Every structure is written in structure tokens, then in C-alpha cells.
Amino acid sequence: MGTGTDHSPLASRSTGGSRLSFQAASCLVPTTVIPIGPDPLPRRIRLTDWTIGKGSNRNKSLFRLNIYRYSRGSDLLRALRDTNDPRSDMTSALLEELRRFVDAELAAFRRDWPDVSTWEARCAWQRRMAREGWAAPRWPVEYGGRGLGTLEAMAVEDVFAEKGCPVLPGMLGLKNVGPTLQAHGTDEQKRHLAAILSIDEVWCQGFSEPGAGSDLAGLRTRAVRDGDDFVVNGQKIWTSNGIYATHMQLLVRTDPQAPKHRGISVLLVDMATPGVEVRPIRQINGGAEFAEVFFTDVRVPVANLLGPLNDGWRITMTTLGHERAGVATFAARLEQRTVDLLEANRADTRTEPLGPGLRDELLDGYVDARVLGLLGRQMLERLAGGQQPGPEQSVIKLVHSEVSQRVESVQMAIAGAAAVRGEDPAAAHAYLSARSATIAAGTTQIVKNIIAERVLALPRNG
Image (cartoon, rainbow, N blue to C red; front, side, top):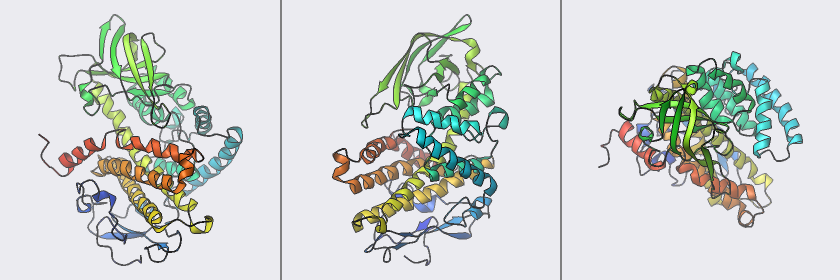
């Protein structure tokens, strides 16, 4: 494919009939509905070229992607001029410092931990990152962070993905709970922040319940005031990191007579409190990343109330607001994942080149992941400017779920019988883990409804 005229405001590619994933959801989100930015004048960005083997229908093994991005000439767009490193113009001194630090620390870490995927190894890695403020670069310096802005922090995440750093185990505490404590916590409650950084405390979020997942405000876990304590009874489900967590940010109903969004409060709960029972949920990949948590007459001190009584929905919106940046982080990780797969399957590194079908599928995954990365950066620009995210937030979630499954299916097909026999456990584990992508953090069906109702202004079902 050459560098000729593009015909779509989002992207154009000669794929021999392949679909663009933004049109895959039953044509729910045509590309004309989701512009990449506000201005009518397009600016061209040439991304990267990949040589993947002879015989591809993409112009004799040379793949080039051109994406139009409408922009006001933002710093982020200028940073994307260098297609080999999208962060080349962004705080270069900071990123060079980070790269040197990661290179040195990662080498020492891998010597100490041959299997870097274990929980214990990932905790050790977080402690290394925390020592220099890199575990939570957006946190203020006084709390142990770097005080970086949204776009700078995204550039840091990109470097972590590029270098293959382990995913930090305390992500929920670092990304969601910690910033919420900083915004709404008392001085005593903010004492948790140092332990969150050092992973001495692992935090989870007690949000979803049976019957109150997508409709979070419909939660039924009750907390009744009894002297200096709240007495909690109820159940939470799909609690990420539940089996490792030492603490929970718990949503409870404290006023059953109030409208459902107004009778909610937030409690900070020590998971070792009598009456808390954690049951792991065994997954298809053999892991137990989620748990059910039961509360039976659990006494939580009133001092552990985060924010005002019955104002928990506002506190929760702070937490969920910080999750938005996490959506962009997932997009960046997926983009790097596809880059790694392309590099691993270059024709000059394989004894037997991939067939044209697998090559095309792998390249399609890269294209979609690259567009997702750009959408994620746009969303962060909005957040950095004090704006609310546009439709790209829901689009990123929807397409990320589907693309990640497709990419891991391709990797499974490349691994072939070796993965089935257990000789390539990483490919099999990634394939099975990706099955949850269309369920976790909002099912595909729910996200499609959100896009239909809030973006396309279609009538509600029923």
C-alpha cells in the first residue's frame, strides 16, 4: 500500500476486504461518527513500516499506514512526528532518565526473579519503581510521586510497555484508590498512601454486586451506624485482586430511603476484619484474579468513612474518573503487544514464514491497536485540558476488548499445536485470559448500548 489519498476521516488502508474494527460492532459506530479531533483540516501522520514476509497482499511485504488526525497542532501531535518513537518530542530529558533507570533496574530485577510474572516478583518490581517515584508518576511529589501531568504520565506508561516491564500489582491502589484518598481523605486516611506505593497494602474496590454490576447505583450491601462503627452486611463480586487485597474501598448503602444515587457511602475496610470472607473465582486460564467477598456483621470504624455520609456517589465518580486514564493505558499496552508480535514473526527471524492469512490478521490487529493508541492519547488530551472524554472512551473499551481477543487468537494460531500440548504456555494463557476482555469493566453489550444511546442518540431498548 502506498501513501496515496486517504478516504476516511479516521483511517484508510488497503486490506483486501478486511474490515475496520470500528465498524465491526454491527455497524454501530461508523468511522464518520467518531472524529479523531476537532478541526476540519487533516494532518497526515505516517506511522511505521513493517516487513513481514513475501507474498502479502500489502504491496510485496511493505505495510504502511496513514492516519488522518484532526488537530489544533497540539504538542501530542507534534510528538507523533517521529513514527519510530511517538514520545520523541515529549519531555525528552525525563524519558531518557526513565529509560536509563528502567534498563538498569530491569536487568537486576530479572537476575533476582527468573519468573517475573509471579505476584511476589511483581511486588518486588513495584517497590523498585516506588523508590524513585515511578510507581505513581502522577502523584504529587509530597506523596511519593513525580507530579507529572496526564500526557507526561502516558508517555511514561508507553516506556514501561516498550521495555516490557511487569504490570504493577498494586494498580488499583496506585491508579484509583490513591488519587481518591488524596482528593477526599482525612490526614489519617492519607497515611495509607505510603503503604500503597510500597505494596505493603494491596487495595481492591468493592463495587459490583450480583444484580448491581452495570447498574452500580443499585447496590444492596448495607451499612448501619452502631455507635462508633458501621455494621456491614452484603456481598461483592468480580473483585479484582480480591485474594491478595489487604484493604478495600467499599461502596455501601447507608440510607435505603434516599434515591439510589444519594444513599451511598464509601468505607475503607481492612480485609482482616472479622466477618470478611473472600472466595476466589477460578478462571478458565487457571488463575483467580477475581473474588467474591462476603460481609457478615463486619464492624468498620466511623473514622473509616471516606468523605461525607451518603455522598459516596460523588466520591465514586472521582475513582471512576481516574479509571479513564487507565483505558488509554490498556490501549498503549495492546499497541505494544502487537508490535512485539510483529517483531517476533518477521520473515527474517522465522525458519518458516507465516502464511498470508495469518500475516494479514496480524497486521489488521496492529492497525486497529495503533488507532486505539491514538484515540487513547486524544482522550488524555481532553482530560489534561479539564474536559470530559468524548465518545472515544466507550469506543476504546469496545474495540480494545474485541481486538485483544483477535490478536491473542492469531498468536494462538501461530503457536499451533505447541500451545495446545503445553509447550507454549504463554500463548495458551494469553488466549484464555483474553476471553474475559469482552466482560470485564463493562460487557460488550452494555458498552454498545452506551454508544448507541449517548453517542448516536438512538432510542433506549424496550
